[in-house]
Image (cartoon, rainbow, N blue to C red; front, top):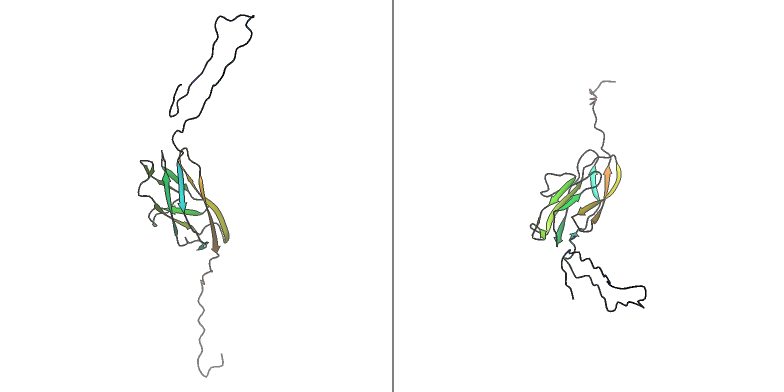
Length: 170
């Protein structure tokens, strides 16, 4: 019996010495190779209930929040926002990507609150995409996003003042 653990590789070689062509048969019996448990895979979990993001063309829309947690992590969790969506840790500074720091197999301060908004760019109408959460050795976790961008109302650049004088015909 040989026991191995972790990511150890065991090479097995069976060699028969002193056999000749007159040997009848060789049998191997009761050989079992079983994979040991090993470390569980890193995983990311999210709790989100996003409604449609609304924004006025050219202006960022209001943010919505959700939470992210991790277990068995060996590296940070990276959140990539799609297209014209943005993410933030503080609800003030928004960017395309946010990195959540791993410590001791989980995220610092988990569950971690993350803010999401639409930039208001990309023209009017619907916008869709997935937030992608990734970490080394773990499966990606996607959160779908839907936004509707309202066209901006054109501003009036001229002001016409009409003058009416009582008793005047014009």
